[in-house]
Length: 175
Image (tube, rainbow, N blue to C red; front, top):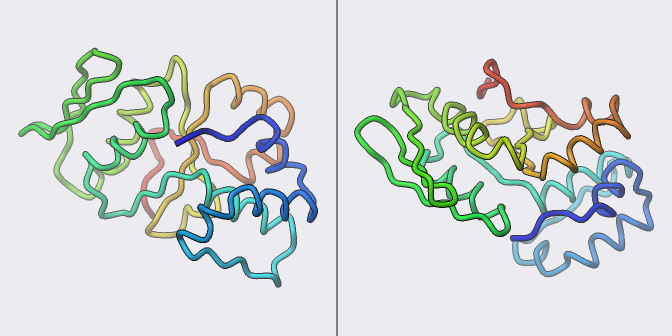
């Protein structure tokens, strides 16, 4: 899976109707494969993040297996190696040849323990953020980007970025 380009990230924050149609055309195969239908009654500034998230987000259901969460995030990291196995204490994650353990509680809190643990492993190069619009759902959507891209977005769109994304911190969990 590839990551969004810089121009696609600019589209996310500054896009217009013409660019939305171009984005949809560029990703038609992905959208059709999943039978995506966009609600036309929404304003363009609401439609753009929905379509963008549909193409680039990592979707995690509240009941997702922790091992699968790591696999889903790992698939989005170009040129990185991620392997995961479940142990009696949690997860053993091998990231670029180095073994790391993520201890789990074997409770409903484990989804975000896993996400925060994986974020910690990749923090030097990448960052995971939650699409704010998915927060109150039982299915959360995440975007993983190189740190450089997040830093540029933070500098260019500080207010809009806060409306659109939530930083993964110690308090974040499924509501």
